[in-house]
Length: 324
Length: 284
Image 1: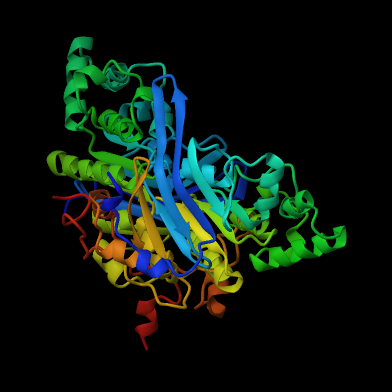
Image 2: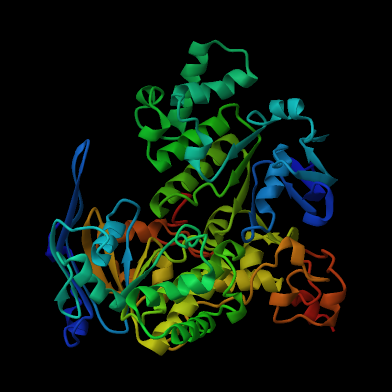
């Protein structure tokens, strides 16, 4: 078996100067070449922080306090900004939620996409521009020869996201990190963008790290899923297994809370809630962080943060309940 | 597109007098690129105690329609009838008399609450404006409302920034409920929330409707949520209602091409289910 393309082992991130504020508490993930791994969880669970830590783009005031990130067989120098500049955009592409925020309003589309190519390769501007036209064609933008002269505000949200994808793919990366790539888009445009990512993955063999809170996208796109809650991975499984036999009470709660066709019962509340809210980082409970919202919590859950074993971090996981 | 493209629901709804009716509403704007016709002759009926979902994509005119209904935007022509009274063209003073009957919950719980006001003042403000009850009665009512929407009464002295998105949406709902409206216009009230919080807020709205008998005009782009929550749905496309019917019927048997394309595009949260064009969305 070959080594994974990206492996994250026991990644820890905290607020600088505050060892108690542990935002990521030992996250481990791996992605093989050509695979799609979805990371799901609610706002603040650490899914975006994980991807930012991989890119070496942690916000000011946060620091990586432990863990090893390996990419294509070597340690990824995430704290060395100069070294990371050679990785970002070239080996690892990025697509974020807000395409307008990812594009510079005062440069033309052509110049912005070409900039990525110039950053990593010594090519003439004419050669770079020719490649930009190819890229824009590849992401199915109409009239690419015209669009290279346009500015971001002249494009629709879906077109802008296609430009961002073209930038991310410009140097044929091995891994694409897509952080809520379609959350700001209409559902029909979302479908087009996800189909595009799917087709590009087939053509180019890129691995995709898909960060999302949309379980529909996960079901339709991902090979495997990691579920995060309050700074750690609480469950991981193949997509089919996760939806067929979710182990962690939080995963089951998320699936139950998600609208789906044909579940309505007259006289009953339309959706199934997870009670309570994610606790603030300063008010984390002892033991398992999901405990205050968990219907199954017992004494041990307050004493010990459950270890991650057999794909789940829970003292009361379904599989464990079955063991006599 | 004409009214013949719509599916009829007259059989289920003609018996009861609607609490809110929109009749042939048009709204257009002058822009630098010419006239934009945002709402093109919309007619709707909202009946007592029902949830009518208004579904469409960005730019279809659904928010302009909501603004016209609420009197925040002057329509070019047409009528908005609340309890049979036309609200279009009323003076501010006259409009204020009708306002307690119809309130609104907005999409962004961060932008829609004044950050300098305490929660109890935010919830009490509509009562103050309308001059309802004595100061003591109003304070008691605020406490009741907070309890009703699942906020701890001792949180009243806090400011909005001390709350999560879901809790802020509860504050917005308490404020909207304070005047005991018959109609609540909900403009994407849960689309900014995480799925578990979305479930809490949708269930709260459902419970409030069951107990208080309000009608909801629920504006959203999420047709799957509508299938789980609404009684009827009106599909809006390019300024017009192109399809209308019971939520389950529209989901199972969509008539208009726009509705079908929307349903086809929704990723179903089940890896074994592919809708529409197979692996609906993404793979061919």
